[in-house]
Figure 1 (cartoon, rainbow, N blue to C red):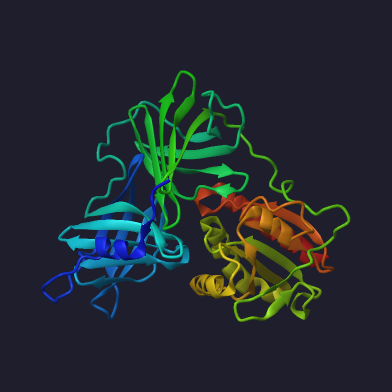
Figure 2: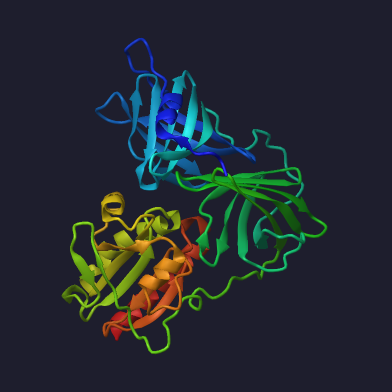
Length: 415
């Protein structure tokens, strides 16, 4: 585990000061950014543009494949640029040096302690892993039955399905798992090797693998965050499937509904027996503000609710945060609601430990994933539970989920 460094030390290391008294300016445009991890460089894109009306402010997007993920407003202090991602308690802080940004990415882990990685970005460089456009040795487009942590070098169990699309030497896709997906992965195929990465402020993913065309196998390593590592193997399999997400979490025998009563950040207690939920179809979202897959689902649910609430539907968010203290977690819930313009109530239901979350919801056999989505009919009875969420980075699997979601809501409203 990487040693945690006190915040005061980080400030001194990552916020150098200029002597001129004049703030530096950032060259607008796209940058090839890298985090220097134990697995090597983890590349991603940044698009940095001046914000209207403020010479020290910038609008920044992280670029991963087709995703343009908006960061919080960035600011310049002396000769350094700060790009915050408050929802995930992380930020990029870098000294501005012409076409180059150099500094650190850091994320709060506990109290006044941070995890950090070196960060660098170069203006006008648009490639991911390689500028070489030479054709690779094979095409990896399709589905791959995947096993993480394999000690045999074989796919003995399928705990993920890789879904890739390759065009030339560019590769994009993700891994589907029973509890969610690995969001937008982008990279290259170089010779017989695969390289994929993702950075979204919380997730730091780096995949490398060697492709054996004879056996149709991928064998490689997966680095996550500051210190995470797993080996992985995958077998090309157009029929690869995951367990049914409707069978992982279910009501205990004898239970028909959820008995929940938790506080919002404003102190108001919300229960499914409240008048706003009576005779309405209700979607209960088990989530956390720290969870990017949950944010993908929220990015779908929030505008969906605005369009459909007049039909007699409600949504209730049950947030399981890192701290049970409302003074700590309440502001995070409020920031999440503001970022995604959430109109439905989001309550603090407990901590993000799955065992503790399961205790907070005793009508369920277990909470096995964040997010988990529960559908309740007009009579207050649970009709369907979906574990995990296939986000927009999964392409057709996201479209399929949205279609199934809407069909189920239509069915429950028609009853």
